[in-house]
Length: 394
Image 1 (cartoon, rainbow, N blue to C red):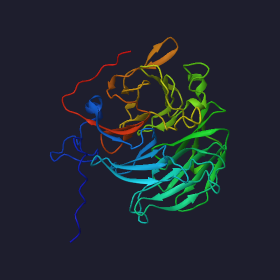
Image 2: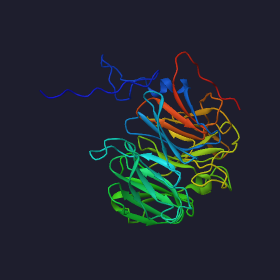
Image 3: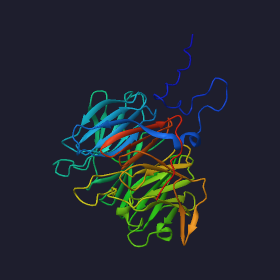
């Protein structure tokens, strides 16, 4: 007798069911994001033994059950989003760590695995290698060597076992997890950020020298980009605004593939149409930025690294990010029409998600209606009953 289907995992404590789980009565499977987005509250806080430890990147695995944090103390912390518990610590004290990303599970690696960028420039052999780590036995599967300067971005292909890396050495490299040598590459001026579109047919590269974003067809990545978006025409802040690559912190497509986010640690972020590069909105923070992290490179050697403090919700409608101040998150609704304030096409937050700590790194869980943020701690956010919307006060 053939085995029956494997049931989906239960939801996180206090949270909604997984997005794909169906209700028994056949109705709408899950509470819509629009129904819970304003009720997210910090429900679990993971602090570190050393108070000067910062989280530099966050990521969820394909199942949404695991969360991975790379930290400034050269450790990688793995948490269960399903149970709300800390699961394991991995150390990379010899190499340093940043931009930790889960890769897809397959027949060869049934246990969760991840890649991350090395940060210890004094490591004598391969100071800028990308390392492929197995969580089961805490060993390296292989190293990816080729970059001559620090890696500034890692993006995992959503469809297969390939990924792309960007570096300060002015190269973009495409890798296969099963091979130590790159399958291809691009030589560009300052290509510091990268993102795959949801169909894995397009890759976007943010380039400082062009003040724009280059779109490549992955089937013909060795050819010229099929589109180039000039960000200068949308720059709402003048000199020193988001067109400065040191002031770009993240590049991300929405899950529906219609929007492209250029995040910034300045007064706001840019939301572009992913097809023609036109400006949809300038997402304005409610508070004046205070010591926000610059990525892909820090302002100084004493500043912690980051990966951007904003993230799309799973439906692509909302963006959740840091407020700009030393506390709270805020929510932008892209279905709200952006208003022109002078020459600026401005979209302001619809509400505050209250918390007394800064959200320097923000990552939405695309399998569960939950959020993770981090600075000197990792915080899980879940929808709460009987809480109202907190308005934005400037």
